Amino acid sequence: MAKVFKDWVFEAPTEPNGVMPVNLGWCGGFMKFEIIGGPYDAFRRGDNADFGVCVRAESCPEDLDVLLPIRDFQVPLPEQKSDVEYVLRRAFRAALDGKRVWVGCQGGWGRTGLFLALMAKVAGYEDPVGYVRRVYAKRACETNEQCRYVYDFDAYALRSWLYDVAWYRRVWNTLFWWMPA
Image (cartoon, rainbow, N blue to C red):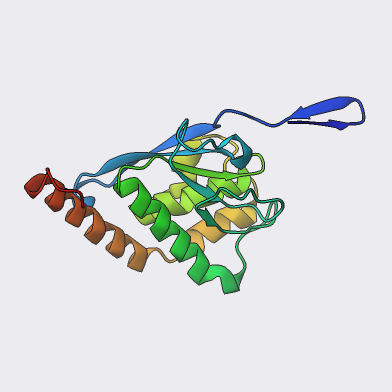
């Protein structure tokens, strides 16, 4: 899919921008997984991920698992707090279920970086924005407002929920390895 803008052609990206490894450590039952990030238009179910989180407000594809509409270069609105928590829970549950999770917006940097940093904060990383910029992409969280949103986000209740779910998965997978969770 190519769009022509005056003298140059915009080709829709087909590859992820990067991957964010998540290690929940002792508190999370030593569970580990990776979250893929990039432009949502590059998401292909089955080829590069199994669960899609779209964080853009402009044109949204139909084959997504969850949508958290955020305007370009912005943060979620205050009335979206419960939506943010819901989407974080869905993304973590999919990852803990063994699905490959793809998070994406238009370019895969700002809003995608914001959501990945929120995931890192919930997972217990002390400097979530720094972590995402180090392991995923230096351009993650493009605005100061996005960084401030991550640092102001209260992740305590979600972290407690995540660690409980992760330990449950760990124990279930150890004791009942032949049965699906």
